[in-house]
Image (cartoon, rainbow, N blue to C red):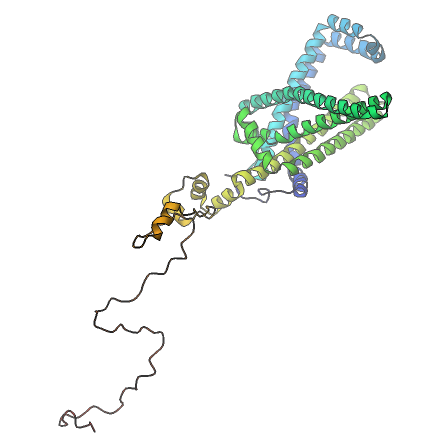
Length: 428
């Protein structure tokens, strides 16, 4: 059962980035290990294909391609001819792409589950993160296809906007001559194309940041995950957008560092064996890529939790569950609380309802009592109920005072009269 942890709260931009790296460091080993295990399928596939299924054809095609990149670029027809004569290699490449994509998606879902379970204080084991993988996997495939289909639409929109801006710039540039009009129009068009295209892509990716977490943790469908991701992104879109922008640059920098490390290792191991060079370079590159996926999963976990805390009061629900009031508070937030729970927890968010004009008119008539006004607050303007006791009509009402009556004479301290004294003997 999830519990209230320091990760479950609302985030600002700075805290989002800081806690993202903290969560990534807290589960770095598990995140990388969960991503490397599916990647072993890729290694096994490549080893079987190269060593047993098609060793001669693969090596022949590799030798033909080595050192001839410039010639292939000069004559693409030669590349197509060589591909036609090497159908087994084409099949190998297609299989490699499919298996690598499958391993990447599986490892990514596993990393998302690890990050969100760590943030919620749940136990993390590799067995749990790999269970029930079919539905999130295919849902993530559908979301990926929809995202790739949306990119051309964004490109067309960016092109049309850039065209309009370029024409307006060219019209303004006509004042300075034909050459000035062309330069201004082309410059404004290109700048607008880059800004609108890149901005639209970042907005789309920011809006879909929480979708993988909804798939991995809540096992929702693709369209439900997209809808919930859009709602959660709208709760703190500015912070999510700039955090994703900065994190994208961190990923680019990290990728460049990995490439530099791989290049240096290849220079060192070139004199040992070509096979050792390829193996070391592939291992370092794979670990670096899987670490980048783990960093992104950690970031998306905090984005997901931030959105749920803002939209669904997720932090308050977990806190109420920890103190034993989870069921009643859940019903109160969902609008299905029992009368006992509604009496215990009044609705402080409700606004007082103004009295109807008909009620005001009836209250103005003498002798007619105005109907009660429905309100979320008590009617403090009403006089308090009477506490005077009911007495007879001819009797004087008793005086109720918090202080004794000092005006009355003190009681007599004389001893009581003897039996032989007549009543009235003590009178003057």
